Image 1 (cartoon, one colour):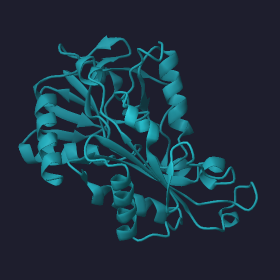
Image 2 (cartoon, helix red, strand yellow):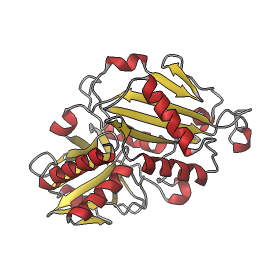
Image 3 (cartoon, helix red, strand yellow):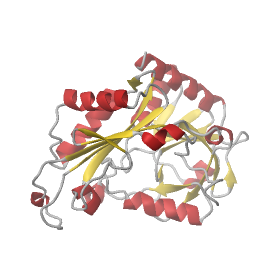
Length: 308
């Protein structure tokens, strides 16, 4: 598939304004062409860092507290001191947003690494200058085909592993596991990889959380072996509040293939229909259906309320 026709869960409309964005790097705003970190940085050298993806609606970051809670919890778990209070980090986000005159349909990638090392080796004690904090904001609107065509998934051999190997709940810079899954899906002619858990149950994709709908019930994985996304949690909470049966459970590919509807959740695309899994068409509307449409409506209302 050529880059011009390629669809991924993060396919966005081209926006010429992104050519001149200003990026926050350790307290300074730099043109994207000049925004750089050291080759000795822990994130570049080892993938030693955490990140969050957020979206700006109506001048406000949706579910900001949820994202910051996860970032600070993850950094604490790996003994990474961000070196900034929550208020200071929010101020850095606001400074970057204002400098770029951004208000709506903006995606942010907030990254924190253990910082620059004194020698090119693994031990965390070699990172002695403090953390590196980078904030990238882009004008970013999902392409229409994400909703009109949906996503094609291929089940891949790469799995999300057990927590004692590398806990998938970390939103870490160490993404090679997911990159391999993405490559495997591309080689299979799909848009994204559907990853199983260590026991062979349906788990997540390489970039998003995965849901199916069967006979009016919404199913997703137990969450034991996947990133517990903010959007994932919001969808589960919205279903419960609206009386839509929702279950976090083990289920197999047989049940996924036979689903009436299927969709992905993530900060960028909110809810994206899954039209096909391993060449099998999902439902009669390309993964969409009444439950999917209701969830989209509920989620949009929640975002509007949170960013009002």
